[in-house]
Amino acid sequence: MLSKRNKEVLFNPLSKDNPVLVQILGICSTLAVTVKLEPAIVMGLSVITVMAFSNVIISLIRKTIPTTIRIIVQLVVVAALVIVVQQFLVAYDYDVSLQLNVFIGLIITNCILMGRLEAFALNNKPWPSFLDGVGNGLGYMLILVIVAFFRELLGSGTLLGYQVIPQWCYDHGYMDNGMMILPPMALITVACIIWVQRARNKDLQEQA
Amino acid sequence: MNKNSNIYQILYAAIMVVLVGAVLALVYMSLKPRQDENIANDKRRQILAAVHIAPPTESETGATFDKYVTGGMLVDSLGAVVDTTRKAAFEVDMSKNVKQAQRQLPVFVCTLDDGSTKYVIPLYGAGLWGPIWGYAAVDDNGNTVYGTYFTHSGETPGLGARITEPEFQKQFDGKELHKEGAFKSIAVMKKGQKPLDGSDYVDAISGATITSRGVGDMLEQCIKYYEPFLKQLSNRSNQ
Image (cartoon, rainbow over all chains, first blue to last red; front, side):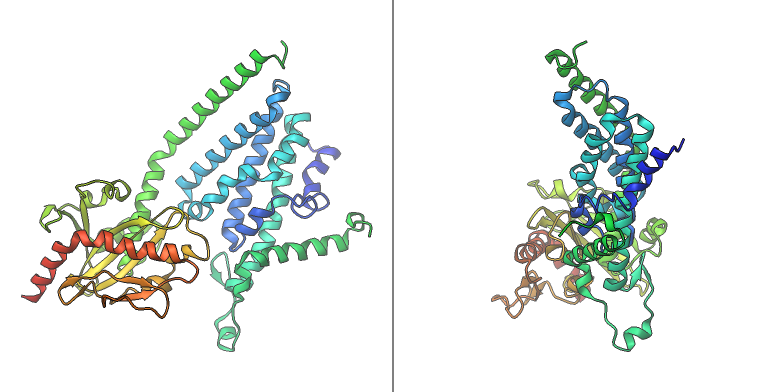
């Protein structure tokens, strides 16, 4: 089930090959949905679902796809899955679906998806493709959750909607940082995470 | 079979599209009842928000709505009541209704804990990128605004989207819809400016000129049809 190679496929995207930190893909939605933790988690789960299943589907039909129209085929599969996810959200988590409205639709344009389909699913069997999709989705979600954690904590003083910074801090002059709620701080937070990661992984550092 | 022949490609694309279409239709049909229920609940929450009531939990939305929104009616442009069921008022789709020459005018009757009665009027208008809508609750004197609720489908986050914030909506509380007996809608003005005709006004959102103007226009365009109805309310409360 989990051979050495499959393990690499699943776990490498979490750090060494992270789609956001190393490949710098999917930055747009990282800025947009990380103001609060809950939408970030739902967005991450949605991307994992769409990515895993589109990888499997493309991998299953990879031998039948005419090379000339393969991008269109990939787009149709991804778009269909995204619509399914969106419909499920409207039916089961209406509030979050309102918040994520535009961004769920934009999963289609998330570079991570098409990138994995082109680079992996078209040349690999369904099971490794599934793992690759889950792995990259998790790598994306991990960054989303880290960024959202700091933005919600410092920007609103809450986590998952619960107040975590006690009232006496506010009474003594502590204030939520409104900047954290704005998109630029997401970029800076991502940059800090990239900094920490490169500092720890020597082989990721570019030659000066 | 040659995978790159034209016939293969066209057939492949055609079959794929039909299959995907069928799957999506199936998903849509099977989830529709639940989605409609969610949308209706959201509408209930919005109406309650106009009278400053929030359901304690999501699942209690229906019960809270039944408790406070005690009635509903459809009135005509002369103020006469044509239907007195809450269901009829609830089922009016404002996005279609505003385009019709003969508009249906739904009103929700809310009875609050202190026994006072508020009349909630649905609003529908245009923002910068798409429709904006909301509800305005009016006291039983047909004049004073008790509360408002606005929302939108796609206004700019941080700018026009701020019409959903309580800070903006709270400004409308206590404003009056009439000056010296004539209908004067509440104006949404740039900070520091006042409307020339002496009507009540609130501060617009800086950086969201068009959405703010949209809210002002929406109030005027929607409430003006209710003018005869509001007159009757005010006459009744004066007796």
